[in-house]
Length: 273
Image: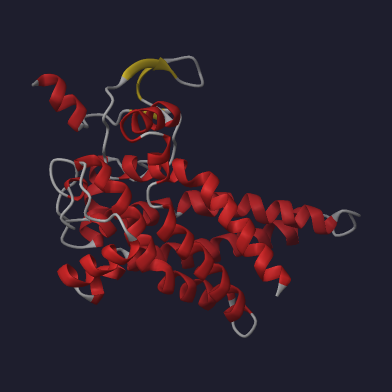
């Protein structure tokens, strides 16, 4: 019981600290670029056209909504995190990790949808998804039960694929790359698990991006409609369009953000006008 409580407290603390980062990431994922590109240099010193990074983006949000505005969507995200930790911990005792993770994702996804929409409404300065209870009523009234599960399929697929990749890579590394005679074998295995988890999350990032876009797609917010975002007919349509544009990794990096070739953002249109 004490372990579960400590996990919930630790997870909640990390969620609060990482909320501004996620907020910026979500706005970038939906294609909102309020600041114009600048000329900078990449890690190799080569001159490139770059989009503003995490700190510039966060400063822009704070200049409009104040520092408190950087924590928009925190309440439903905390609910999602607490429920996910409890459900995952309970199910993990009696079944496999994949089912546990899928169950946690299924139960927490409605809160995830509310979190994303409350963030994305910054783009159009709307106030449609402000309170948790009001947001639940709004989604149910406009979209029914299915509205709470917008973007669920790619998120579930990404979670399952990430889990299998992580465990498979960790097994290969631990079995064939590490010497079982090393005194710090357990510590080395934990490091390898972390590294393989990082690579698995990178490979499955497109599922995260598509899931987040579908969660806000055509939901009545400016950020989920043209010119910021096309209206997608399905998550597969969203995937194909992003792949065609070369935007499958949009939002994955928050620092060295190179402008995709041929891509026009809304900030560019404003400058032309």
